[in-house]
Each structure stands twice: as C-alpha cells, then as structure tokens.
Length: 265
Image 1 (cartoon, rainbow, N blue to C red):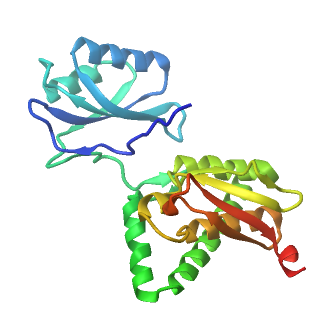
Image 2 (cartoon, rainbow, N blue to C red; image 1 turned 60 degrees about the vertical axis):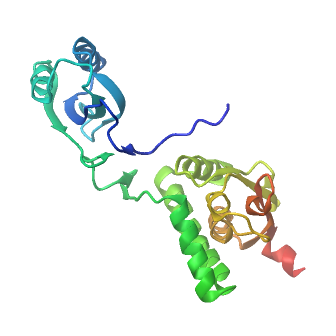
C-alpha cells in the first residue's frame, strides 16, 4: 500500500467564506444513534471537515468530536445543538468557535493507552539534537544513545507486561506502535532472534528525516532505543551499529545487530 499521511490535528486559519466550529457529542454507543446523528447533519447540510470517535470506559457511551463548516447551512450553532439533543441517545452537545486558529480545543490531557503523551514536531527533536551537538560535540551522541536505550528498555517492558507478549510478537508490537507514533517504519525481518544476528531497517526514521543532510549517521536515539528493545526482549546484552543512514543520502537507515559475546570473541 502506498503512503497515506495523516494530520494528527487540525491547525490552520479559517478560510475565506468558511464558518467553522468544533462540536463534541456525548451519546449512546450504538450504530443506530450514530446513523441518526449523520442523518441530522445531512439534513442540515453541515459540512464535516474532520473528526474522531471513541468509546468511553463505560462501553455504553462514546464521544464524537467534529470540525464542521456551517457556511453552506441555514442552521446556527445554537440551533444545531438543539437539533442534535432531540435525537434519542444523544446526551450532551458542546459547540465552540476556535479562535484565532482552528485547533482541537476540547480534549486535554493527551494520552496513549492511558499514559500521558505529547505531540512534538520532528523538527523540534532535530533542534534539540543539534543544540546538544553544539554544546557537547561528540558527547551528544552518547547522551542521545543512552537516553534512547533507557526508553527502549522501559517501553518494551511496559508492552511486554501490559499485553503479555514475547519474542517476535513483542518486536512486532513495537513496530506497530512506533509506526503509529510516527517514529518510522521499523522492519525486523532481517533480524534472527534465536541467533541474535542480522540487521534492523528503519524507513523514514524521524531523526534522519528531520536532521537534514549529514556526512555521518545521525540516528543515535533510535539506535539506543532499538538496542534497549532487543535487550529487554532477549534478556541479553546486544550492540547496534548504524551502517546506513537516510541523512547521508541512503534510501533507509540500517542498524547491524551483534550479541555482546560475539563482539568479545
């Protein structure tokens, strides 16, 4: 399947002729209620720009958050609230006019599977990395690598404990999560788990993509992170070396894996 980028959040100014609002509904979680809401929006000629839907811990209820454009509708925000509340199963409706930017304004704090989370642009991490290099020169590599290794161990331990996974299933879960979080497309298919040999390929690694051109590999945090993941998965000490890096003009980043015993032999 070809790439399908997704904006994590709407962040823009209202365009000429637009009349945009954010709507958050609390409703019974059933296909019938969802269908009635969609039909009401269609009847009122409400243009839905984007949105997301999630069941609450109480599986009988859900929240539905939408950005809508009322420029082609005859309804008002107040009338829209009244119309939606008349639908059986809709319990609460909130509408706001986001200003000066159209940005999601209802939901905070952000979480991933219940854990606190933040959204950070890739360029912000690149700025951090370059400032560390400016201040500590080659010491920046060690700082980023050790930070990544600690994060990889902790992250993998959490996934293993929370979902009861191990071996290649655990690595596949890490791959899924890091892709969903925008870190890159990690490929463990060239890594032999039983022999602790091979390599890991990362396409569109966030470190390389945002760093810019370099004459040497730059993915020190990712190298440490993957090393920590493998050590937690295997219960053995491993070392990774970045032998290809997209920041140097390569097609992808590649990390060669070696078991510490092999390095010492």
